[in-house]
Image 1 (cartoon, rainbow, N blue to C red):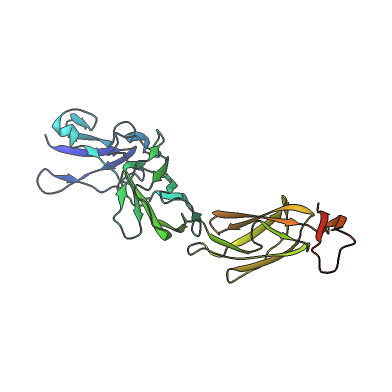
Image 2 (tube, rainbow, N blue to C red):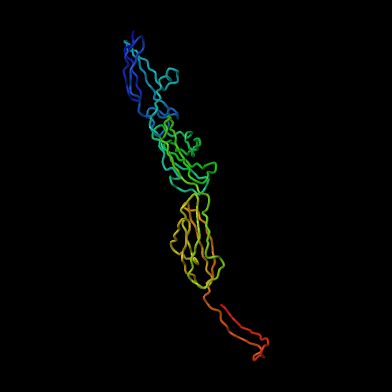
Length: 315
């Protein structure tokens, strides 16, 4: 007897093979479009139905001779021949990254910021061992990711292990799925600022006493990393309104209240860091009161020494 037909079925697709030289039969077919999940035992967000929980698409090969006798090999079997009838398919859709923080242009007030981002994959599933963070010109390092059980989504919260210097820093992140597809790289550039702004109040001087209610608060401020710096002034707990800062110098006219006055000047840089200085000034517009004058002796002899006594009070 001779072989009359050979067929192969994979994922519901049946093809008839053509006899070639010798005893070899061949055909072509289109591979399933979905991943077989071969790197994770057939588990993933979009594994082909026939490959789920297997990690491969089993082929069923049937050969029939002219007498009607047939033999089959099923890829789900345990024999070496069955194992050769297992098709592994890898999809080619990239995983994605979103929600990278700190965002570009952001200010960070710690030298050990936390890098956060989300990852997702719609095919073979995320590879938790291949999620990377690169800081500035350093080497990319693999970081821990929290991956959902279906391998479709994940998140990263990575705290920078070594203190970053003040100034601009660029972080680049990327990941892979289980079929080896690399996501597009996502980058963010932010500024680290760990130093409070400088602040010098030049007038008025703390502890001063004046009889003029009009007072001008003046001083200078600066921040090397996070300029410009804004100035806020309160008088006895009340905000005194907008303060103009010109090349680091500021001045603000205020009106003192009778008695003790507390002036608080606060400098805030673009990163939100603050420096405050408190000045106390006393306004006294009440003239002293003379309540008694005594000249002794009175009358006095010409050329004699007299004693003058004046009683004065001041509130």
